[in-house]
Image 1 (tube, rainbow, N blue to C red):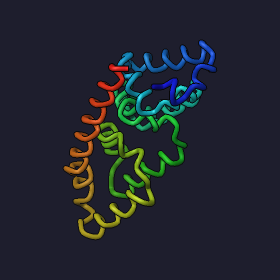
Image 2: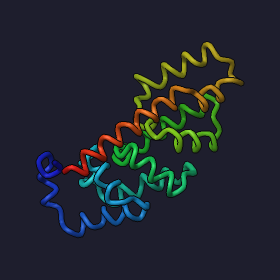
Image 3: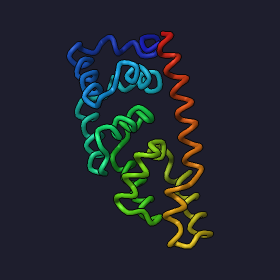
Image 4: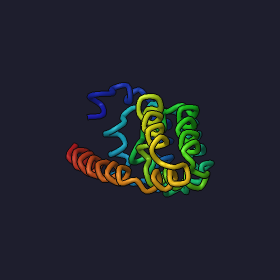
Length: 170
């Protein structure tokens, strides 16, 4: 499937391909994990090792462990190609909602899909609605323990299971 959609991958050097595989393995990801990532985000092979490393460093600076970074990468590999300013705008929004630095770390570790949501179209309107109806001292707990996030994560796990099956068949 990868070659059918992105034949340019064949033009990459062996060193480039190997360095990307080694980078993923350095996070503790298995071949199955790498296949899942490729199935969802085949352009990952076109990213430089510097780009991959800068995103991992950004996540580490949020306080995420190597295991948590691997979780983010497997659940939302497109994060690896996002501009850091876009990622930072999402963490600023969480802090505006009353979350501390450690809360932001916990939230991102629990809900990697959050990093891919649109700030303007999705996150700001929802935060504004919450702020309108929930007292500031209760907003943090509402965001941190929202059942919506649990439902979102269940959908992500279901999607990844399907991707893993498709990748295994290929």
